[in-house]
Length: 426
Image (tube, rainbow, N blue to C red; front, side):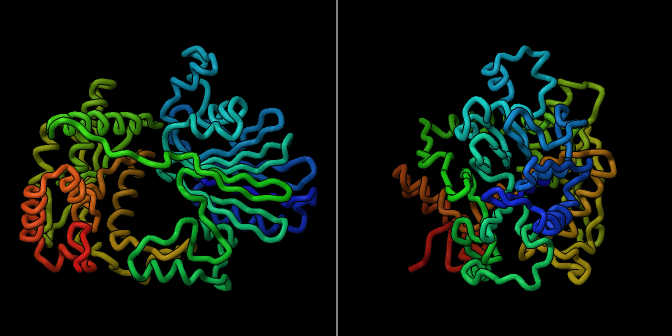
């Protein structure tokens, strides 16, 4: 993902004194600048925007941000999935549309719809816009928060960045910690919206926009306020709709700079993604095989999944890269892990995942699809699957499913922190 940063000293004061501070912010995001970086400074020197380039779509290649048009300057990280609809709204021909990057379309959307432009963008994104004519600094995230954005205010100095640690210039040793956030973290609960590990740093919530002017800071929610349950007549209709949405999600991620790869295990989630990706790639480029990267275990044979992956590889003629992971057990060689300045590292499988990322990158892939965590619906404490059954009046099925789940996992694993399928025991 690309990196974004902005700094504004309000009330027309130049950034001269804050320049070194902003340099430390952008240096902390340098790992995101895979394809270089760009910076823009206003004529009065009061505001700077920075972008660390990481091109992932064909339209991105060669683009240099920040982008400026008239009084508007923008930095963008993400992918716009409704490009066709936007181009039609702007009156672009098909040939013209291919020349516009997603960032360029976001800029055009702002010029047409002002702050409401984010409601016209579909896909994962984070964006920062400087509107000089109205002296506004804007930030926004997509509805599901698939790209991050954080902000910090210090008097009349406002700083925005893609990572919370960057707002502290990578130097977190002396930062005041947010005890509320830490209490939730150690209790394995989601922190209150907008809080981070650092007391002075705030996260822009998913589906929200941030508007900063000379004298005020405002948060607005642009995402859906209430997602009504989706009801179909029978289980077959649910399955058909799910398959349609899953295929659409995979196809959107296939719009990549170079062919994407899939991180595939032997489970149902990643193999489903791989099957759809392989089918789509075969239609587009029959001579190209889908690349998948998979972890395997030579010594820990009881958890090795090659026997379930082999039929997939044969059926879709996959180009599989195997990564041996016997020594990459959770928290292995923890002392050698790279310092994470943005917060507690919660990835016990980090060494395993990083090996797969490195294997995909070594083969030239910039986009890696995954199917991770679909089983969280049943094992992480989510109440949705049982609550839906009860809401539909299917009490017997709910009880049978819960008992089946307990028998399979055992009462201790199923209950977790006094939970069983999301229901608290009282």
